[in-house]
Length: 173
Picture 1 (cartoon, rainbow, N blue to C red):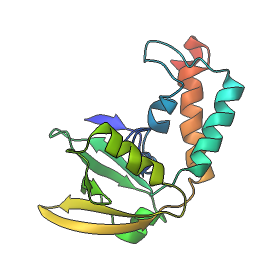
Picture 2 (cartoon, rainbow, N blue to C red):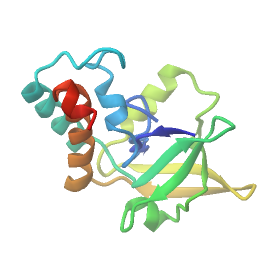
Picture 3 (cartoon, rainbow, N blue to C red):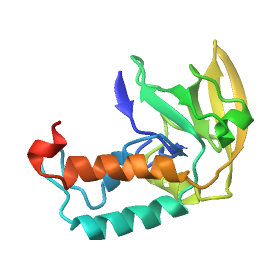
Picture 4 (cartoon, one colour):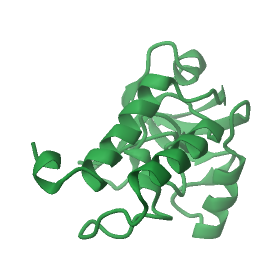
């Protein structure tokens, strides 16, 4: 399985989950802010200070649900962890749920623009309806997105800093 650091959708990537934040735990900061990070072969082009400031501001504005997803063998986002005390736990998410839709938008049929539109709405305090499949049954779960907890923000930012800004020998330890 390919690990997708979640939000959002929480949560896809910076596109959707993290978030859609899916929100939270959802991705090593959505592929470490794809907007300013080049490819896996290159390092972040911003200074560590500028990157830290930008990531912290962006993460503070994003909504967090508290699920972590991975792509399963069918290419679907499957919940692999639900953060204790999170909005997702309160809504009834369970490990093994497969994400099908966010606010009635089919995650696997939507185009990139539709996914971006949903992502822009995933802010702190937003009410989001997730459609999930559990044991072949569809369920709808309503989640009010919260602020990303400081310890999770630290994990996401810390991983990006190690991967993108630490000396290469330090990042590989």
